[in-house]
Image (cartoon, rainbow, N blue to C red; front, side, top):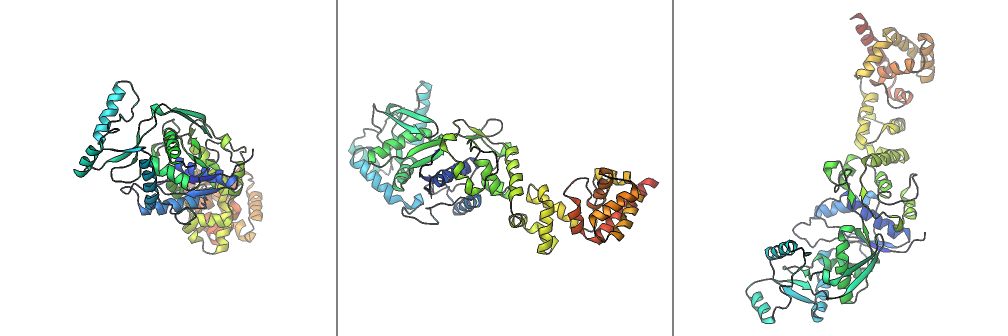
Length: 477
């Protein structure tokens, strides 16, 4: 399949953290742009001044970059279509409204939210789809002037042309048809004068040269309105693709109650960005391989035609699978940075590197390293129930023998375990299980030899002595 050079955009509102569905939309826009050598525009839809917050915008940008997304144009990198915050694009919206007024395609609407709600209820009760009833469509100029003079502030509505049909080819759902008689006149500016979503979103897509609008299918019903607006203004109409919703395991909308979290929270839990990307590229999209993909290879495996038309479901087990793969594919330096201050007790860089090499196969999240650091750094260990049983079953003499052989092995793990096996007559699990239990307090975990090297001779001696005392004490009880 060939890739087109799309100009895509991601247009979030800084009113909260990005949830996983929005993160997938951002990632798919990034992949669609990169796959064909196009570009990605980041636009911030912050016209809702009451809910938009600067710290949320800063967090949004940071989280997107953590995921590995880079945009070619945006509020922090600039570009030929600046500004990229809708709160700074009022002049463009005013110019569009002036054009629509000149063409007689907008009119003032004084209907209150309460009146509109009553109208919707009445239409639903009558079995009709709710749409604007046209209350203010033909208000005389004198009445409009009188209401404005009395202090009323009208919204502006777009006059939808009657009796027309239209269609567009959705890149995911295929051909879509609509009738203008099913679309009520809609608000393009609010009563406070700010541009409404239908207007600002469509104007900015055209002004910024966007050729593919890839967004959630909750916007599918908005597309005919925006096409009508762009046609009325003589502006280019992009192609549209609407991604199906992301659902929780039960089939209901994704929520924290079902274990799903926002991008920022997943990051705080310790998920690696490469794990999220390998999961997202397969979430409602058949990327053609089940193998691990490096970030640079993902665009070549992304094809809009392979995007599912049905809703995708969040699967935490799959996300954890890719997290384990990510840990396995990460470099030692990446893992050291990921584990951060949890490694401080280990001291030197060489000891940290040796520890990471020894335990990486046993890590899923950063906090998994904490008890393993304790195993090699604490003076002693407290065996869990299984380890205590293994120590008692081995008996005190087993550990006295292990301690004697340790003293003569000069720290050579293979030579030590071989001599302990010869002296005790034990091999396999009967040999290594009690040794692991005594030295780590567990009966399973990372390979024992590198842990023993990290513990040092003094800790090994003291833990073998403690195990002999435990086994001897239990045998006397």
